[in-house]
Image 1 (cartoon, chains in turn orange, green, purple, yellow):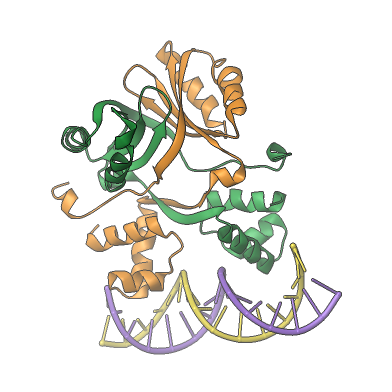
Image 2 (image 1 turned 45 degrees about the horizontal axis):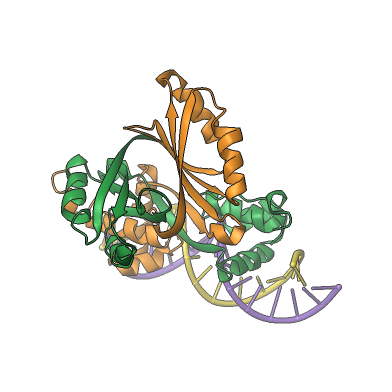
Length: 156
Length: 156
DNA sequence: GCTGAAAAACAGTAGGG
DNA sequence: CCCTACTGTTTTTCAGC
């Protein structure tokens, strides 16, 4: 992992369908060298995949919300996780330190479907004692771009 | 937007570098028909872009956290948003309804860099009165995949 | 790591229903 | 809106350096 790898990762996070020729020009390597580096980054699991990003609002998914979920005992963590994984409305699910046991990020069609998700799906899961919902009004920034630089990782 | 478009969106969200030939076989169209549909989806802004996804932990970014930020008056919203946009550690920034004014999702190298971000960068921004940080222990699910189906959008 | 070249796979265009 | 056929790129995989 040198500066060139970081540069490639940066470029590919911005433009996941950039061609190897474009990338090679940007980083100053030959095209086969770029192909080789990308292959290795994928192999080592640094690059986990590629995804098209979609405008949820254009698909009628207007509501984004964060839901804090309290669970009464750790023994219910696993079954909760399993159920939540199966819900398409849940974009992210994190176990967290603090008052809540989990934080979910969800995207639903409207407030009605959010309500349904809360009362009919989440609150009835075994072990869930409380949910606390925060509705997003506007998203200023919504990316997955992980910033990396050689400088930052000195001695890592 | 018909069922075929939804199917293509679903596939491209899972595998952003799927070839048109692969997609065409999956949805039962010819390759040029798929190319045309994808072009239109991009044109209309339904597909906003493509990105490589990266394993942050493999890059030494071990800490994910959600930060609720309270701002004393709406007049500071814009300047706050502008400053936050420039911070590479901030993956997401949402203005929200409720106690907090904003929720940020951040990714940092360790707890020390998180602390620095909090006290030296965020809390000193004009208008910020309070921050409330929730550290992620494990992420069960972390995706951007927006679920879509014809059925769900009946009458939309 | 590079260049250069070949083969295979892919994306984009054209003509026609 | 879709098809097939064709053309130009891109990717992949080799040499030899």
